[in-house]
Length: 178
Ligand SMILES: [Ca+2]
Image (cartoon, rainbow, N blue to C red; front, side, top):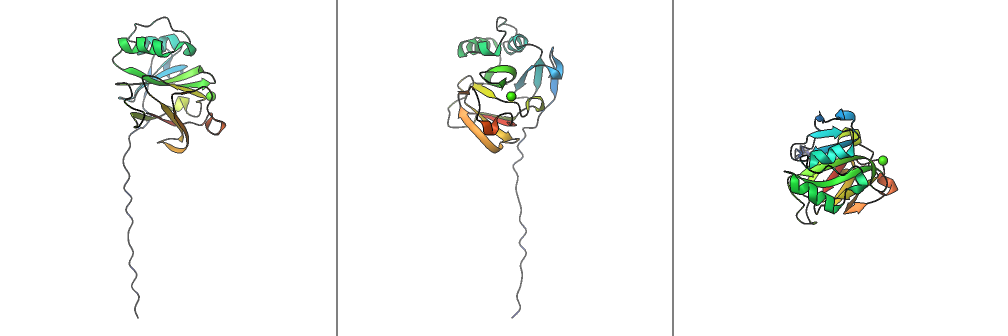
């Protein structure tokens, strides 16, 4: 009896998720600035030499009295959000306890509920594999992933983490905000 072999082609459909890292605009610190703000809507990242300058930018120039990442409380973020067209949704910090260089994300609005993802992005290259603590603002929870495009191991979503677990410390490459 003749056997017939049917070759079934497999078609993989990939959803084109555009979360590509984007151009780094020059604030006062240029691309090497210690504190960078990524606008989640446009994907544009702007870096600053000081945290005070980053906060000034976030607030449209209105909040000028914050100089350290550790001063960024919900109350301060409320002040920043009140003056800005976008809101601050979360911050990744290079060091434990919300210290060191920062990667700040801003979005068009606060997070809605903790049951769905409001924003997601790849972490800009300059901050890739550096996250050691993180904090969500504007009702957002933060979830970090080992690899780009939300793959690999992950931690979260949490409101904040003063020291991420060892398995993902200095390894995060993408992030979601719930
Ligand atoms: Ca780090």
